[in-house]
Length: 517
Image (cartoon, rainbow, N blue to C red; front, top):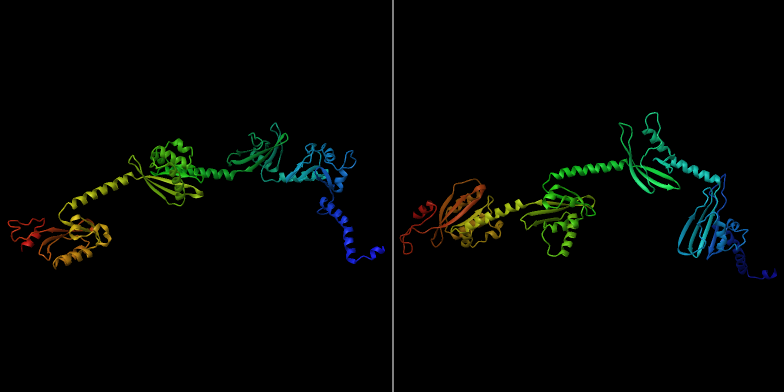
């Protein structure tokens, strides 16, 4: 004792901590395995037995776990002793500990259904924790009562059937539905006549009494021993939504059937979901092929095979074009014109649809293209005829913009009218004409004639260049407020060495008379 008195106080404190550590560790170890009750109860189940093993040898256990291994002939610290204790009640319990890098938990049920115990095995690396829980019959009855109450109060029908199909148990929702369906004063036990297989979900309907709606249910079946557990969930809202969607699609189909434009709608997975008869007529694709819901790429490949699409230069770029088509159609930017070797011309539009779908519209514009081509051909013919004339001709619109001129006018006035018609107007033309010809009062009258959009008699006059050469100028009113100005060459009536014996020829005698004056 005197030796301790001579020690420094600091070393004495260290010694006290060292002596207290075993006690603290024991208390901590017990707290790891024994769960504290959450509150006061009239009945407390015995504590679970918890044992900790490493590489098949016991390294720790709580009092209940140690009691489990008492009175054994073999070494109580080995895994074999534990297996000998648990195997009669839990035949599936592993005979060796094993090891695993991950962390896994297994639950074992007793061989006897009336045995209230349960065992669990938690393994990680070289460690294994075993927990054996004993539940009293009173607790089991309480749990069964809670489960039964929960099932009885479920809002949807739940029932149990035997191998023969006879119903052995049903909850209140099932019985309420049975009373609603059965005739007055009678009761029925079997609601659903269909046979249900384990792990199957099947949709079925119940026919209520006359004058009431049908009820739809999704029946899920699970096997429990020799019995079948059935769960019915209300599917009325889903069935009605599917019917509404189907009716809507049928309405759309009837509407689209009247269109002359071919319609093909592809869903978000790029599968053909809707098409109209016009698509069959325009593409010559068989109805059975379109009804098989081909993909977008298969659809265009088939068009390519039947030569209903411009032939691509190479197949790899063709695939890339289809991918770009999808992107453009999703952004409402896809619009192309297909001119086929058969002479048919299609206009294709790509439009986005809800939920990532896209719609392709096929429109036959062959008649429109043919009409445009004929119109252009007629314009080219008129242009060729006017270009063959010696008279210079220029046409102005009702707003005074030049819309047409022939080659004689462009040569004489060195004017490129067709290069930019919007920049050449009556004011530009009058300015050039006045600068080229001698002053005359006809220019003021011509300006009034061209500015008036109402019909007027033709204006005819003669103008002379500074060299004395005469020209006949005519302003003619055309249909729709357009006016044409025509310049014709004239010869002087006074004979000379060059024109002796020659009289002028002109389409307008007024010009000839004016020159003769």
